[in-house]
Image (cartoon, rainbow, N blue to C red):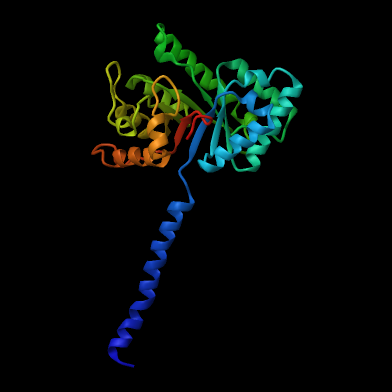
Length: 284
């Protein structure tokens, strides 16, 4: 065997190993999509219709949605029959690997979820998220205290709402808190859904609100505190990026946000947990 051939054979295992690493990275990138959550506008309309459940199931699969947040649950929690139908649908989602996050408007909703999970012990919620918009209230300080009290109640009931051994995660939808408000909220939440009411993905990271400053700062306050951060992109709403999502796709919007974050000189070492869309029905 020539020395040249020997050197070639010596390199070959390394070459194959390098190729395998590249292949694994490519497969991993394409096979494991980003966590993606979506609000369902009217859960009662979905649960009551097999056709609607099938249609939404198709969108969930096509858009790689991993979590759903069902709106208007109150109508499905006021009678045993409706609770049974809701539990059956939640169980269907869990069998498909979809997590369910319950929106919490007040303590009465927590109590109603307790009734549902007591009647259906095999049904659980993977998380609870409150949307008490204290920043829009004239009594802002009192409203924040109200939200903190509600979050404490959610935490106290997380074990019962969640799966055995896996308490429900506790989170909050947030618009525009101050840094002091963020410091009070960060220690008591596992995740936050941060509002990005913009018309194009390239505006999300750079957007500055006149009354609350750069949105990138808000992202940093929670991310650096160890809170899982999920930006909300709107496929419908008063200000939405529906046209861009239809034209370029949701992956492009997410990639732009991640790239802008990575290029940020102060926050480039942080990461996005996932993205939330309002609503599932409006996703392209």
